[in-house]
Image (tube, rainbow, N blue to C red; front, side, top):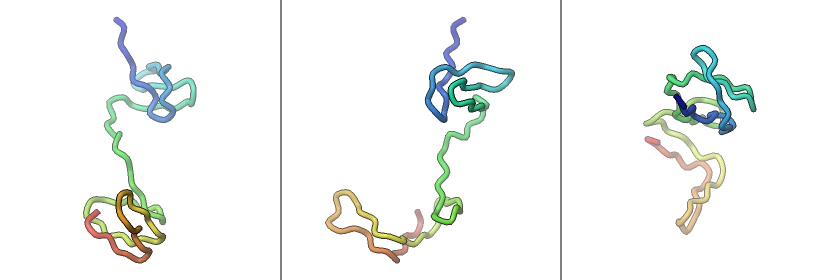
Length: 81
């Protein structure tokens, strides 16, 4: 009888409620379908293009890498991301 609803995916608020076939968050007014499995994040480049597996990108500014002695320099091409 006490069905636990998932928290809001936008604000992580715990007060979601069911309305018809959607879940609604009263804190941020976000509505979502609980059966829709679009939880994967979308990665975009600097121009807003969606990146997918196997794409090639160029670094546009210095990118520090944790644990590496040097950062990746601008202009470096990274393939098969």
